[in-house]
Length: 220
Image 1 (cartoon, rainbow, N blue to C red):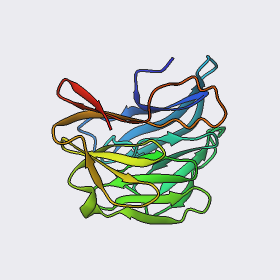
Image 2: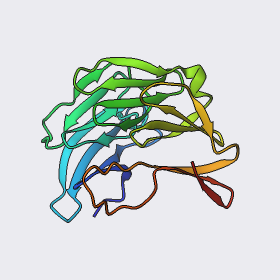
Image 3: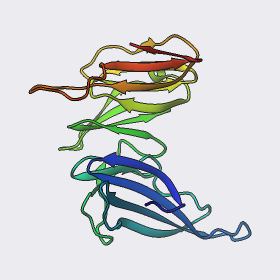
């Protein structure tokens, strides 16, 4: 259901969103090159593919102008550019321009969503929390406390998690301190959190974060 030029995807059920980068004119001998960013969606149960964003641009390279992963909720898609964090309605048409949420988040960054905020992880700016409703942005964890070369940014709605090398760290969204979990040599992890108020609850997976170290998986 997705073309070969996909660079990433995100799921906001019942819709699947993905980003494509197409090389229009990227001959190495050309001083000015041309590329094309697209963001599309399709319903999980099957539907016509729909293009929400389509921009062709010139530059010295054929790198995307979208500098982060794309994340989505029911109403908006969010991503970063070199100058800002922007959002685009999930029902946008190609002519719809993204709207700036904040200029405090920009450049290479990893994004995750909760119900009320966009969290951004950057090597130089630490972890920032930006409120969806107002665009107000604040530092949650300083760059020094994040650590070197952070990656694999995720959330379970209770903590934000990230890797620095083979070390897994987390920080509670409600405030607190950075903690290392799983010891050293972590190769991957998967956070799980379920809130069931009115049962019965069909998903019996226990809450926690599953951490892989070598050929062993532990739950914390």
